[in-house]
Amino acid sequence: MKKILIAGGTGFVGKRLVSFLAEQGYFINVLTRKSMDHPSENIQFFKWNIEQQYIDKKAFDGVDVIINLTGANIAEEKWTKKRKQEIIDSRIKSINLLYQYVSENHLKINTFISSSGVGVYGAVTTAKIYRETSEMGSDFLASVCQIWEAAAMKFQDLGARTVILRKGVIMGKEGGMIQKLTPLAKQGISVSLGSGKQFMPWMDLRDLVRLYALILSNPEFCGVYNAVATEQITMNDLSKTLLKSFGKKSFLPNVPAFIIRLLYGEMSVMLLEGSRVSNEKLKSTGFSFEFDTIEKSLS
Image 1 (cartoon, rainbow, N blue to C red):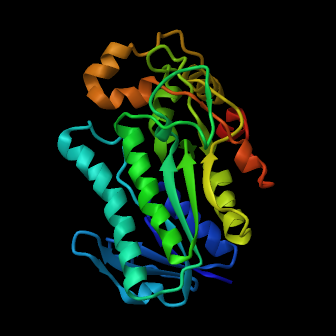
Image 2 (tube, rainbow, N blue to C red):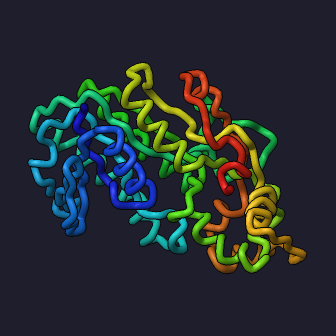
Image 3 (cartoon, rainbow, N blue to C red):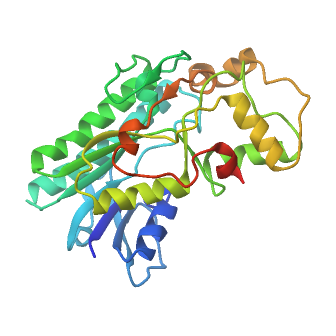
């Protein structure tokens, strides 16, 4: 089986992906800034430091695939000027360091899989359904996604098959949005924001890791794909379904948009706006979803 290098393998998605691929028989080298003292037979951890431009060279031994999952959480803090730069640097500097190391050491990398977000289309709520060929947005998050993708595409210059997944909200109980909203829903509190009519492209974490496995085994995958489920849901739909999963109903109003703007400033646009995103290109590859409705996912 292939040996895979995963950068950002200790986060919400990374932990699940590392364990899933290891169960499939892959050998995984994980780049981490932290000390990890529990390697297994086919999972090893290696240090790197992006600011110091350092990677443990042993991390690349036998590797011909790199999966990049790095990037600061865009919804963790208000978008101050400093935080915006952290969001950009955490994505671009990590890819640039990987690219520089592979290029300077003339390493043969067959496949590079990187991340992006559906935010590339802009924070708007419209009737339009965005596809991979649609025009991109011009706000902060859209700009971040565009330079993020451009950095990843440089791996094509090294002869690597390059795949970029434009992800929506990832649904999983171990982290992300659902982990934050669950305590409120259990108390019967509505978790919808603003009008609640904003669309929220999403994908179940269990389907996402299966998608990575398919990309690894199918060389026909190349270029950009929207990694989102088929069901188009709004924030109101999510709130109702999440409450229902705990046997609850809420008669409380949505959190008003002006409160969200006061609390989160510019970042509020990603919470209050959202459009539909097509996954037809992804489904044309033969990928099938096991959790293609929000009800299936949350149950």
